[in-house]
Image (cartoon, rainbow, N blue to C red; front, top):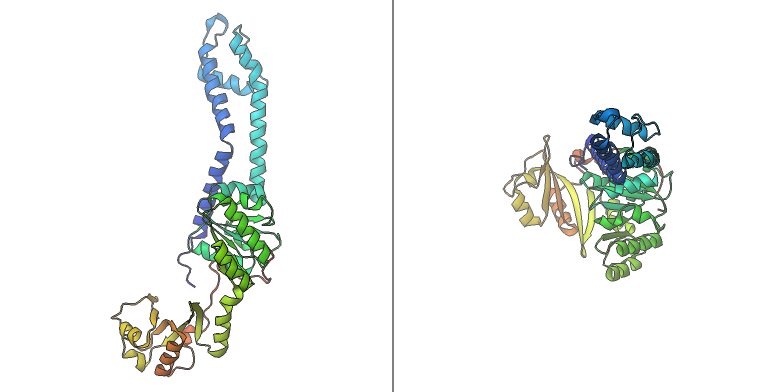
Length: 376
């Protein structure tokens, strides 16, 4: 799997910090508005109305100095007989201390919540997201789904019940918000801003939890796209028809790959397109293929050339007029019977050397720790 589309971690980290700053500004908008009043409007009032002994006026700096220390009960200007100013002198200290104390305490809490990936921090950062994808479950399936979405440039929020799940640290290291909570909790989906999410992927190993989560998500956001992982194929078919959701079975997806891997090591991928079994395989270009173009190969064997590699960068979807050259490795896709016909034509029995050792490592390029899928 290629990694070129993966957003570089520094840029992702910068974007995450920017979103968090915007979220904090939104959360502290009342505090910031009061700060503008205390340190902008009130000093102007003192500058305009205050008259010292002998009618002396004060500068804005003196008024600001007086306002700042007045908030802590330490006025710096002498007493005058102006009723309105004296009301300000009495009212400002309690209101000022309340606003400052509230702002400092809440900011400190959210700052440490970010460090500890607290639920409140997840809520704050999720509020800044739009059209993101919620992935329920940080097991092997959930982790790979999240990693693939990140590689495609989509924002992701993950919900995982177990704080010791093996993939949590990897996701958090890439600034992915991971909410440690039971997805069946009434507040879990709301904390991930499900109302503005584009899709939710229920990838836990609990069919009932996946179904309940999908129902809750659709109730909170009727337009959200729902993708569910269900082990029960019969239940999946009924849910797909009645719930209009995308339902996938891990066993059904894995069955063709496992069966064909047992029969033919040349096949790297396999899947069903309707009732047709499709396979992807690499072919070393020998004399038989070197006589053909991409278009001729497709017309004769009904296979699609996905990629051609030869020492340089892979050439994706080569032109129909491309002539195969000896030494190239062609990645071809077609129906299984057509693949067998092509293999008989080329006479190949073993995979090309360049295909050996290829892997579908997750886009985060991080070694997978041991452990199975978590319940949530």
